[in-house]
Image 1 (tube, rainbow, N blue to C red):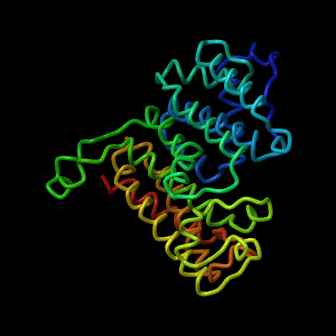
Image 2 (image 1 turned 180 degrees about the horizontal axis):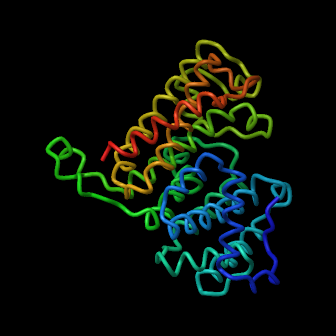
Length: 308
């Protein structure tokens, strides 16, 4: 469990603060952490600080604190965020974030939006349409891309290639958001059974009805042709978001591409695992095995070097 507040730690140096954020990133995001080691030191530290803040935020509503999470606790967390951006960090993790804010001129809005997404988790257990779900996915995951983009930086030198002209209407911002949405859709598909046991259904109810599949069916874990068709539809949409994000990864600064390629490739492979499990996300948890992860890393590194 991460320590959420300890005012006595604000006497620590930024170097010690970044060290703590590095520990959090290495513990909870091992593959991504290894990728950050290819970045320059300033970017490394900043990404670790952002990751630690996101991890702590997630734990408020999805960790050991989840049972006691309230609107008031999120209010306090948002007040702590505002204080950090105003130059008054409350603990050692905030100190690292404040130093990052100063170095990279981070925008507070994505951080606020993530907290707004956590408020949705407190009050909503159903989503009627995909547009409603997309907003949730942006807030809890798409925001991470926006937080990181100013740190990672972009390299648009390859945009003059003739085969890129049809892609120039997109922007790195849109693509960063797309990757977050893809990741969150993958989370949702993997965790359908677990969420159902908590009384939650994230899949849009309109789309359940489109495939003649009911809430009762989902709560009972029914896997039949209707469910498989519904899941195929959901997986295809998630892959479209990954595809949209890929061009954005190639527009990141060269030293930032590998960790993002690795994270994207490994996360998207969860969709393959769901397919191998015959779409049974009720009694089998989809995961990427260690050998598959190891095989993916050289490919991610190659893409980071040659796709620009």
